Amino acid sequence: MPVESIKAVFDTVDSGKTEFGVVPIENSNEGVISSTLDLFMDYDLKVSAEVMLEISHNLLSKSGDKSKIKKVYSNPQATAQCRRWIETNLIGIPILESTSTAKAAEIALQDDEAAAIASEVAAKVYDLHFVEKNIGDSKHNYTRFLVISKEYPSKTGKDKTSIMFSIKDRPGALHDILVPFKKAKINLTKIESRPSKRKAWEYIFFVDMEGHVDDKRVRKAIDSIRDSCLYVKILGSYPHGGT
Image (cartoon, rainbow, N blue to C red; front, side, top):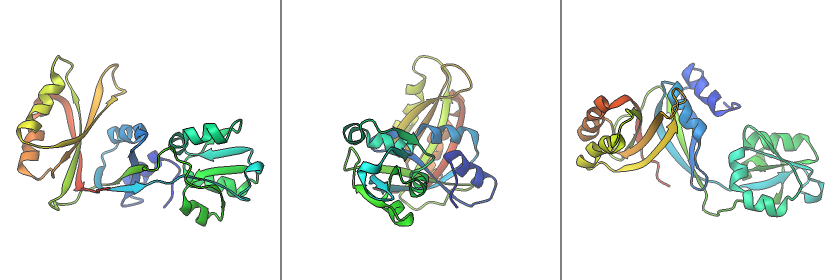
């Protein structure tokens, strides 16, 4: 069930229209997708799986003729991942924003002067021709996606847990929060901060760690930080997606 935005994915799952939603969380070259992190603050949804996909960007159009291209559409994340190629090869051609690379391909199908930066799958689905293949700035480009739902799965033995928390503003506060995880020998695989948007200079921290929330040491470490935090939210435990 395609929707127009990341927020719309959260809405469809939260309303029960779909059981699961797939949202991007970070790219190996461009980093975290901030809008996805922000939405976890507003919705009581869980992470139930993660998927790592290798990303290949291509310039597509109806004719496949570069000389006919007057404008290019794509999602801002895809555009950012092709920045150097665009600056070298599309001089003077406006790059316009679309809600997704698939939407960009749909627009290119309907406009003889438009091209899209999109995937090989989009080329097949929308019957577009390749103007140029593999235009990404990095040939090792991966995006991590999270599957969101209202529940998270039981233990598999190879799991990750994601949490978010806000800490009291005092010297050493973040250090004190991380100590229980070190003592429990829990590997924190990612930590990211975002403004809370509720109070100036208040931050929300997002942390990924190895283990399942039903593991005693993981549960104990999380419980031990609650008194030092303004709030703690467990986003979910899910099987490690690999690369």
